[in-house]
Image (cartoon, rainbow, N blue to C red; front, side, top):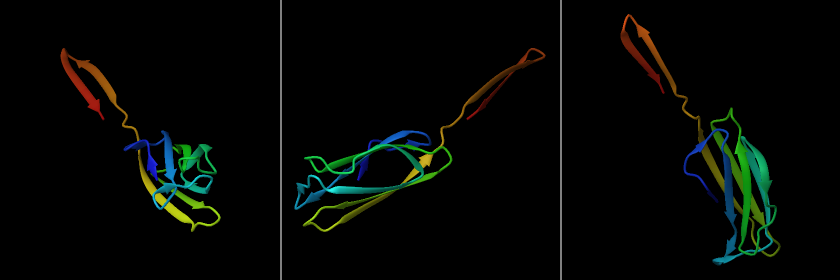
Length: 112
């Protein structure tokens, strides 16, 4: 299971890709059962395509700091497979810049 981002911020849209293979060959039409905690699912594939790939598009919830993703792939004639991933979500840093003057002297404050 892979994602399209190395750093994920709260509220980001994320694409997760599951690749289902057997003997290094892609498995088409495998059923994907996704279980995600800490997210809002925007779109998901319930079966793999001809390349053995299923995609999940989701948006992380603002309040969570970790998102958990599990996917189980099944297909008749094959053993089932489980992939799991925990992703840490980082808040965006807020930057406040304030300038003020006091008796001709400049005071600069920066909060990051």
